[in-house]
Length: 184
Image (tube, rainbow, N blue to C red):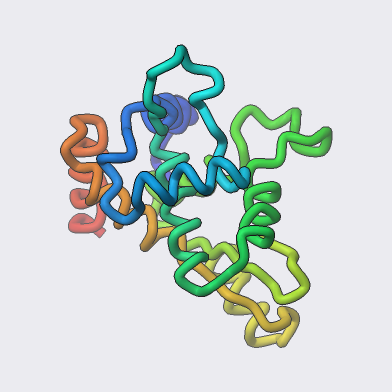
């Protein structure tokens, strides 16, 4: 049940948007992989905006994206396909420009605030979808989704939260999440 105000949503978005994490905080990826993915535009290269000599820092949302990229690569999904997934998740075109928060960010926020399971679906034809558990199961049962690979976002988000628990903001989010789970 959602007993959170829009203010909670906005405040959590602000906390998770802070660029608080560096590559050395991410044990699931190497610095070499990060640099390669920036070169081929799977990741945004913040260094071009930073003063020379500065290292890149990432928001929680970006860390989740990096985790998703590592998962997709473990399934041998091509970098070209990963860039298509990135376009979908981070689309700021005219159709989405009026939204204050990217759809990808909203899904992560919803997953943290209320126990919701979302899937990123990568269909064989190259299309990408984000579906909640109910719609995903319905799509499977009604045979309306072609061959695909799915990544369960709530699991990836929890993995990233647990890796970044040295950060006080993340530690607070984890504590809130555990309290909510125990009370339900």
